[in-house]
Image (tube, rainbow, N blue to C red; front, side):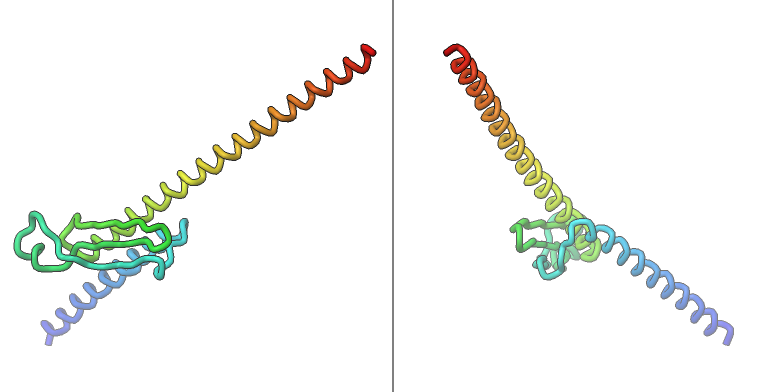
Length: 142
């Protein structure tokens, strides 16, 4: 009787640890996906068989994760560990980083084009002022 209760206590502890791990990972996923708003419907996820070191387990199981972000067309392939779950987390993080860098590049291009427009406008304004000054001098000279 005593051994049975002990086994139940141990299994309850391991369940509590697993549930706490799941909640921590859930919070991690939410924190990583909130800033750039990646929707689940925008990601196409597939699992392929991996290769490389790790033996027969790696070659037989589909633990390599391939993510494709449909709106941008970015494809990420991750096979850094033997665990499919870890590879999913790593692939999502890589995808998020690539999307952020793509957005920052597009923002830099927009800022540059805005600077060029302002520069053109200011040069036109200077040339108009010069023409006005020349015209006023001509009128004054007459």
